[in-house]
View 1 (cartoon, helix red, strand yellow):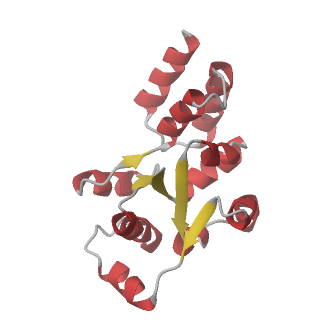
View 2 (view 1 turned 45 degrees about the vertical axis):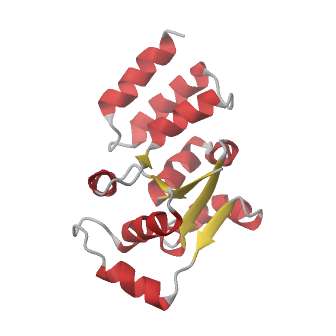
Length: 165
């Protein structure tokens, strides 16, 4: 099983789509950091709590030494401490990252870290038979209505592809 470190925006989008449970059905071992969890609003935290309690979502808490290393990490100022915590943990666990945050994605790509986003997750949900094409079309359209940071060309390409199926 492959390990994926998840950033807050993935949780937020999946919660809004009411698709969070699918994240734990695609043969990934899902981790996040305490710093990412602390970014979530109370209502969002309530949504992830069941997955934490069932140990489907593993929360990594850093030692004080690791936190110091994260703070000292050379990274653009656009990366927050939670972003850097995701990178640090991905390196530590030799894992991929799930994020839609553009500065974080660019940093990962520049440092040869595997990074996937919400569009890739939609592909996985379809591949694993968790959703059908009509549901993917509906939810991608909904996602585009509230998330203005999505890769529009990729999203519209998927919508076109799924409509043809």
